[in-house]
Length: 303
Image (cartoon, rainbow, N blue to C red; front, side):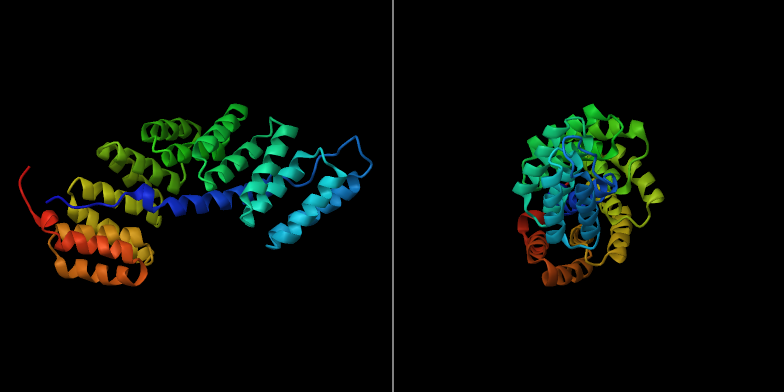
């Protein structure tokens, strides 16, 4: 039976963007405890006080006030790279992406070797859909610091966004030389392998990941897709059930679960998933309906 399966990369795009945002802010603030002193001005103490105020306001979620504090700090110490870097990060939180690009570009102009600003710029460019520019920014960061995990993560994800799956696979495999990947990156690595028809390799990697990270629903969903696309429906069913049990609002996994149930000719179970999806994602529900009732998709023949 030929069944329609979901394209995970497209449906998890929002998830990837969300991860970028969280990492941009957390990493930048964590690695920027205070500004460097500027020997050309006598206002270093004022800049440091305002910088510290900006960091505290950021941590409190008062992003507008934090922007004001960082901008005031920059008037006292205009040559401080970390002030401009953190201003850019805070502007990202306010979704003022073009202003964030300007601030981060200024930070890079001040100190081209400051790897974190290249990573932050790459993430903002990715949010703007400028994936080729984002990839270049991550690559520059790796040139500066070959051991920078966030730069490798960004480079791999930029390749996926550009649909350069073989390049993404090479990126993940190069990154693993630095140490083990996190759960979500393993899921994305597995997804890239599935996209290049390397299902068995993907299954091997994702099964190990599911043992290391048994509650990571992204890993479980991609593993379920790998089993689904290789027609190991019983295994796919168990894995995807686990994913939706852990995260009932995970619509992509619920869609894939319905596809498996259709493949197993369990129409009642598929209709149950269809009804749940109707309430939360009518587009996915309609795709399930089409699979169940389309004459073309219901035709079964030996290959």
